[in-house]
Length: 478
Image (cartoon, rainbow, N blue to C red):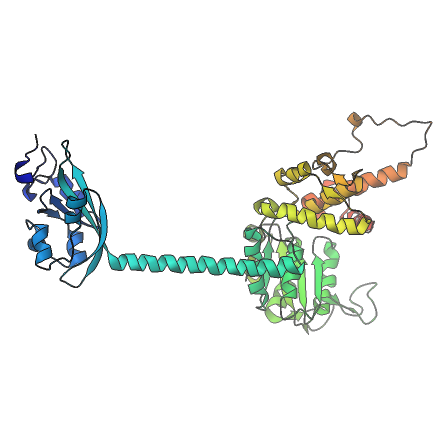
């Protein structure tokens, strides 16, 4: 049983007794490993234990305080105030600032320990270096200021972009991307846009051009996957007179020259033939375009923005893409998040597309609540391009002013599926040509929405890329 003589109490077993000699080795090790200072008194305010951190924080030596009563330490001015004495008076934990005769300061928290009779048998005081607290408070304030500044930047970007109607972006993930795009736009450096098909790489390239020093020049877009391999070089770099059979008299400037003083956007750059990549590298490094059949290159002042949904870094390791060109294009890589990664943009984008097509078709349609929920739940593998196609299809095919969930047709039906019960009726005339055209248009649009690339979309439909491109342009104009 604990001894309560003269108000003092001790601990039996492994507990701390009235004297420091009774403290176990294990407890000593725990106290010495503490980053904070630990100061322990018994129930009569006599000091029984301090650790090394307390000496470092206070500047006091153990010999100055061990065995000393807190009343005497306060009276002699060694410490300014005692948390232990306040605990003995109030019988609850207290926190206060404490000064030492060494000139140092600390924040302490003193906590009582009671025995089974309700007597205070120990007061444990945790001592924290006040300079550490101020330092951490300063760090916290700095972090808060950085967060406030970043939120302010995002709010500015949101107002400038969304308010200006250039780009629909609400989600912070996309706004962060646009913030980086705005910063790099001011620097006349090569940019590599990365992301899945349909995320809006062309939109971001146009945004960078509009916010650059070249905004008064031309933005020339080249879809590297849409040009036949044997024509890519002459399209990009032009050709001299007599370079090949059928070449125009006087030759023809390439798109790189047409973009002089402006921006050349190379979409699907990963599909660029390996034999043309060397000329592109020369354009980036030497600012020269060498037309096919010409004896000398021509100086070109152009900024290049490239885009791809392929891992061209991995392609370069397999010699499918020039590694030197990859590193040159990657001066500033910028990844555009997939639509599923910026979920807050789904509905605003859908509403923007709805307003666009309402104007185009002179309608006043709106989404039902369930249609909006369906839009939010869908994974959008074709990203923004697929969303735009879905909205256009829904606004055209829906019968009322309110677009319902079923009108979205997020997984498009096969119009020729026999399970749909199509049976030709010889009594009624059917415009088969119109039916087949609608079917072809739907498949071409969906193939491009999913693949985002002329060649791969054409391959998915077992079509020649040139035929696919020609028919896509035809249906896009409808």
